[in-house]
Image 1 (cartoon, rainbow, N blue to C red):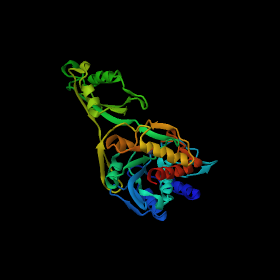
Image 2 (image 1 turned 90 degrees about the horizontal axis):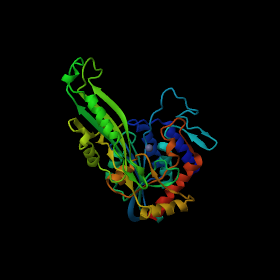
Image 3 (image 1 turned 45 degrees about the horizontal axis):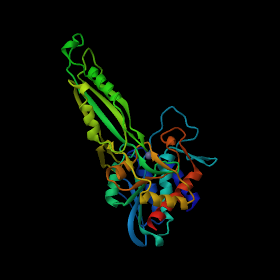
Image 4 (image 1 turned 90 degrees about the vertical axis):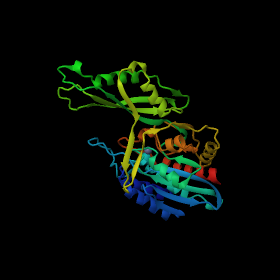
Length: 382
Ligand SMILES: [Zn+2]
């Protein structure tokens, strides 16, 4: 693997802005690099995710490595010490939007897979550069997996070069109370949906959260309240909607969570709807990606053969990783949580660097990640 070329490719990806729904230019860079590196097959599927295949000399399973190409934006008015699209390197540190989440991992996967010795490979490696993860985790990977049918998946979200074998899931819960409008000079003639919602929120806030021995406790946060009509001019509000962001642990289902809210005896008499939010986003290719915002938590036991093989591969690449889990939601919530394909996470950089000002990665970690991906492929498929 050429270190210089991997660094230069990472810089090229960072210099190419790629907000969700605007990943076309960065995807073209990825497919061009895969072709230049001699991938056996390279294409862009209908949602705009790039896929490259490397075939081994012998038949065997398919290992998919996935990194998303979209990044979050730049918060206005908060200066960076380095241009977020400059990809400057200073004292072994590469700065730029998306370098940790997750263009560094993408570049390391593309290059790490390319330098595997095909003559020793039983099976094939697929690398996907998927779109729109920041809006709707799992949706683009779903289409990639339908095309590839992988037996194993590696997600490159930042793990600080640790071996991730689980992650919390995420649900977006919409609550709606329905009251009766009235003139606010005679509130007793109506029913305030906002006052009802206050009781619902009080019940939500005292709900005990389940905990998992490795993933830790589930967490929920109230992120939004909207009353209707708004602005409310001398009117008792007849509708109120609140949104909760819920971080899930293994075993929690949408039916359980919604059912518990709706069955709460302290809320009897309130007209309450509780649903999981739906997301719908247009890709840069014009396709529609939609899905329910319920992504399950996942865990793969440390003694699982895939985890063992990955650990062996990382060790032979000169890394000595600890085990870890993702506290945020990733595409693995689809691959592992929804369809149960054995999945691990491994990526350069710290998760605390995602979405922040002065996002950066150590160049030495980027190069180590490339070796690590290659090590995982060789341990699983050679
Ligand atoms: Zn990410």
